[in-house]
Image 1 (cartoon, rainbow, N blue to C red):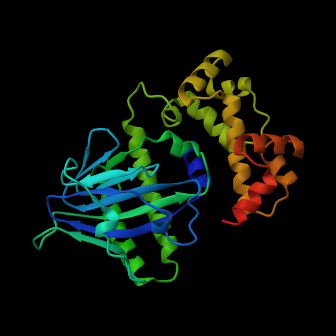
Image 2: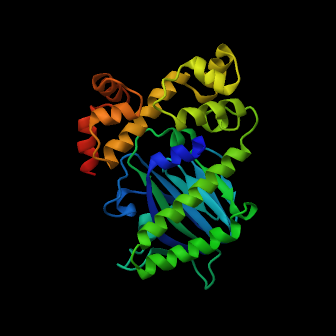
Image 3: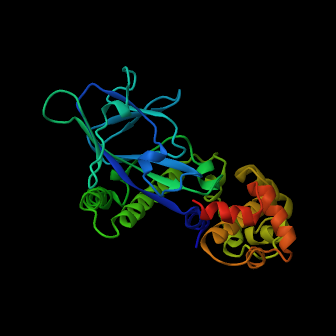
Length: 320
């Protein structure tokens, strides 16, 4: 299993669709998701990834003061940290707030927006989210504020469009297990967008995602992720990378943004948090599973990295 797959496994997303939108030009909309949009029982404490899938037409999207990006039909728009963002036929137009034009969902349907004169919508898209309760996850931290992926150019293009239509039908029908299906479909498309982003990174890019394209660093990251309890040292990881210790440490720190041993500690604590949340293992068992012989040493490291003791973290996770 590669390092990207490891992080996706641990991040534990919940997600789905909540809105279908139809617009007739001209229009501009300000969008920003809230906990209420995600529905009851969804843990958003670690962050929300907003997404829009363009079914028809071409949409402009902009985050902050960055230049707008074009998203043609078949595009997936990701806003990894749920920044307020503009969508429109022209994002320089006066903007509407999404709440002012949204028609609330019936119990068995999506919320809807239908704005503009005329009979045929120039732009049509569906909106959804991915939410996580895991704070400061390195994958979400590594992504830019906005990603637009034209899935027409990806191997999954036909599958993606049919999947979203299927997801909307599942939501409307409220069949048993439909929320789980929506979550998995959303997560798969999120992964596809992240893969596309990694492939488009320039050669001089740095960061955790760029490190995955470096064969030497990818070998070290994969080994570290596969065996987190191993008594890793910088020397041992350098051997896996087929680099000298100094070359490996310099390259890892420059690309990932933190020294190898700091990264290892952070990864162990993320894994420990997952086990605290999802298992009944004792703190001593979890400490051993992530490479600590002493429960007290583990507890101090956990509190230093995640801001509270393991027991308190488990109680908070259990309370949602």
